Length: 142
Image (cartoon, rainbow, N blue to C red; front, side, top):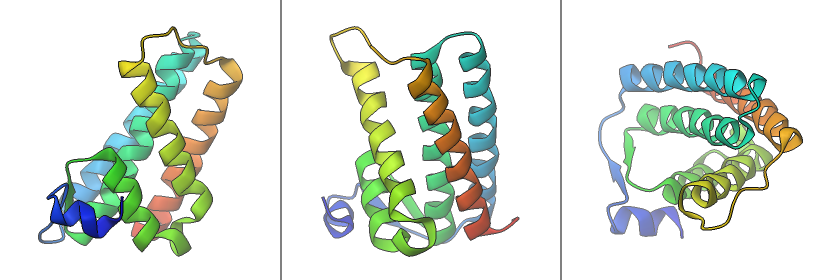
């Protein structure tokens, strides 16, 4: 779905830029990233991946808040980033967010047991840290 479709369906909404919310979202992103590390260290690999995604999602929300956008759809956040931050954030990082979005969905709503392992969890941790750092560089220290 394109971001314009998300706006038409009100899954994305334009408002006023909110740097306080952007800052709070970055703080939450960092908190979730640290929590994902704790889960990983205690061998909760699936939960670590979901929490790594949550960290990435909160960082993505920081960009939206900076732009005055609120979201009602995880998929629309990805669409918005693809259309507005591909150059500064990078296609790879946006693809990571989308991949882990789907992992989260499967973890929450899937009917089969997860086969996610330590290696995949470690990959999610590394990518969530890179994603966070990239967003922080774009936004700057608010």
